[in-house]
Image 1 (cartoon, one colour):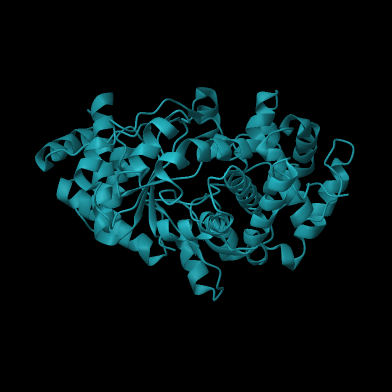
Image 2: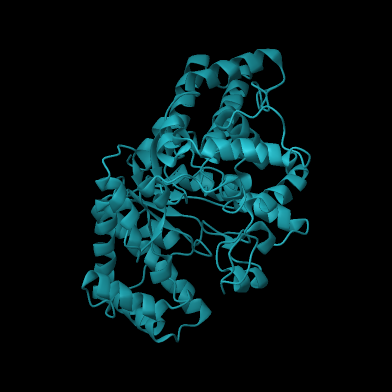
Length: 468
């Protein structure tokens, strides 16, 4: 039997379901654009087999292990490495059994849909994962992973990925991207410039990071002009490795447009480690505006995703480091905080700034009106906690009437779990087609227009927004 319903996420009313299905079939096989994510470029550089099912589905996937932790599992039991190099579970089969024992926890979540899609459409499984069949399923996936057709590059091609962007820090040497480029393989895996470690005075080792930035670029990064030029040099280096976008994960959406002398003075305080929390926030805000100006120079798309209390658990941060599934949404102000940046560059037609949020209350009140007015702005898709049927529906309902479809940036999967990429894009395509069918059924959209919009939401808007 199939693990996934062929009509999943379509409206229950027969006429709308038929139309949603027709819309979906018109876009189901379009190439995947994955312009923002966290897959490891080393997979595609070395093209080695994935180690085992646990390393593919459990250890790297925040959605999976955070749910298991919420019900009493520990990160070491799930094979997640410790900052101090201490012991964690090394038996992948034991990790898999713990995962299978908690599989019921995902019922009703988008993770359940992604997992079932991957199990069925990637590995050919027909029975749901249970504690009783955990070893059988493990062995089936392990057998597949040993075959050449399940190597990273083969899966990339099988998934129909046209372009996939990874995310690297400003000081990364991009060795894996260089290896990909020199390999002769034609899959398009590009990088994204993520400068948080060298724009955030509260980032650990900030002054040392700036010193490394200067050494890497040959610029005097301890002066304000030299620091900005060092960013320009690194952006050029990233562009040479395929980058078309930058990415900024700041605590808030605050921007500043200070006089250059004032910005230089603030930078000096950041280097000395004497910034107050308010001054550190102001400096981050200034750097968003500086990055927007640089995007006007070099054409790179600027992504801003504020509003996350990162590494919320001190215990997890101290034991396992950053980015371990404990980033929690918080209230975000866009209208006031973005005004300095928008006053500086918001009317520039050649600039693309993509705004993401984890605060759904801002969709209709702030984000859609802003994107519906400023030429530089586009709305990123719902993601993280809202990368789901309900999240996508709420997003469309709250934004479309104000900014339309064409001030949005398509879809991105933002994943570390490679096999979930086609699953996530499938959910987005089905959800959008269900929404479009409802617009047609209520007389708000012509049927021919719905087919055109479905294609644009699936492919064209992301291609244009990210200059792919």
